[in-house]
Length: 335
Image (cartoon, rainbow, N blue to C red):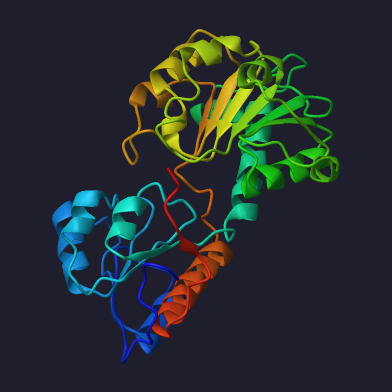
């Protein structure tokens, strides 16, 4: 564990958690650690984050807490572990933490199936225009069944383009096969033929071609300077008029102004979003588009997934306290 201390921690580590966790997780933390839990489930202010990082040995943030280099530089000398709740780590300046010899861990894999399930749900909802139908009922404007009423499209035989083929992208590919969809994927690296055969997925190195030829597109990329507005006005313009786009990854991947224009002008059929660029504030013009299915960041919102993430955090803290490398330790990317 180069550049990090390898010694057993004496006593109960001082732990501060930034958000409310499930009762089972919080109870276990009280048993094992000298923990300060949140009494109200609202995000900490920046000043509160800074104060917490000066007072603890283990800091447990969530993906909505932005832990930048300035906060890390101001952290107290006792802070040795940032055990983040969630798979993504783009909200933490990993290089700054590494420079301070502060370990960072995450909770990979625990939300894979839940997020993949939600992705398929959004694909179905956008394909079949279910959200529009629900609004018609709620508004009392439904005139009854008709052979040309709110026609959507079938999934069987359609081409699904997956952008980012990590754990979640692969899980989506598995599910898409059951619906008879043809899967194409774009990724930084191509998988070996054995994995492609297992997933029944074909590699497309050209993202523009993937967008132009897909009936449905789903995004599973991390947020980074390279992926910011990956789907912009030009790329939305490449998509078919009857195509749908789904995003359960990060809101910054799509230029929302360009998406609003594409939806409003009918240049794509629909969009399904679980994430937004400026959460929790969502552009009202985006929400006003009738061909949008919008869900408030529920990709990981299952009891089972949240309990599993809590278990992983506790395990990472215990490994660290025992002087071992935590199983989910994250290092900064190589330059």
